[in-house]
Length: 361
Image 1 (cartoon, rainbow, N blue to C red):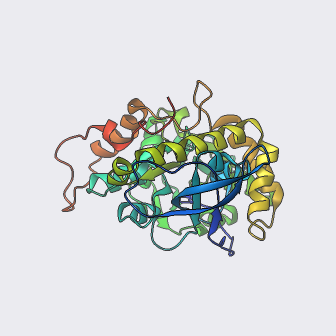
Image 2 (cartoon, rainbow, N blue to C red):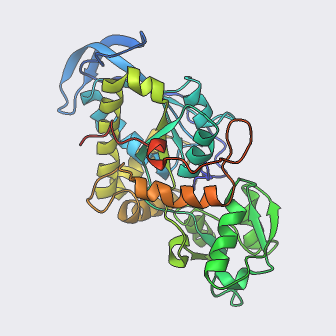
C-alpha cells in the first residue's frame, strides 16, 4: 500500500483531522523545546491521574490512514503513549513528504520507506530510520490473474510496466526479470495510482501494488491479480515501510524518542497478535475514511500474520544486513546521488541509515 507512500491507500478523499492524544507520566529530562502541557489523563487501568507535564510529539503520516499505521492507533487507544508520558499530534498527509517535514524539524517522526531513506539520506537529508513497520517487501510485481501467458517474471519481457516514476522502480523490475532468465527489457509508462486500474483494464501488463492492499482490493472488486514476490527471484529484502526521525532531534530528545518508540512497539506487537480488534481500532479512529471495512480487516490480518514482526517476535527491529542488500543494489546501479546530484563515489556505511538506539533492548 504504501504508495500508501510510497505506496498508498488510494481513493480516500477524507483526510483525518490532526488528532491529539493526552497521556500520563513524566516528560523527557532532555527536552530541547517547550512543547509540554499539563492536565489529566486516563491510564491503562482506567484511573484518571494528574499529568504534570506531557511531552508533545508530532507524527506525520505518509498518506491517509491505512493498515500500515494501525500500530500507532492501537498505541493511542490502548493507552501505551499515556503510560509513556507522551502527547501525540498526528499530522495528516500533505503534498510535502514526511521525510522533508522530519528533516526540516516540522515533525518529530514520520512514516516513510527504506528506499525513500536511502535516496534522501544519500543526498545529505537529516533523516534516519528508527523503526521498521514492515519487516519485508509487501509490494510485488502484479499482473492480472487471468493472464495465462504470464507465468513468471521472464514472461514480462517486452511488456508494459505502469509505475510511479520513482527512482529505482524500473531497475528493480528489470533485475527481477533478469534473475528469472529474461532480458529485462520492458516498456515503462508513469501513471501513479492509475497504474493499478491500467492493469485491471488491460491497458498495462504489470504494476507494483501492495499485495496487502491493492491486491486485496482487486480481489474484492472481482479483478484479482497474481504476484511475483521479489525475494522469490533472488532480489534483496527490504523494510517496505519505516518510521523516520531527525538525527539531531533524536540526540537532543533521547528520552522522549525512547518513550515514544517503546509505546509504538507495543502498539504494533498488539496489532500483530490481535488483527481483528486492531483493524477495528483503525476504522473507529478514522470515521469516514474507509468505505470498505472488509478491505481493512483482510489487510490487517495479512500484515499481522506475516509482516509486522521479526524472527524473534519483535516489532520495529532493523539490521545492517537487510539495509545493505537493497542499498547496495541501488548504489551499484548508480541510482544514489549526493547533494550535488552526482552518483555516490563510494558505497555508504549502511548502518548509518538506521538506528536501533531508541528501541527497547
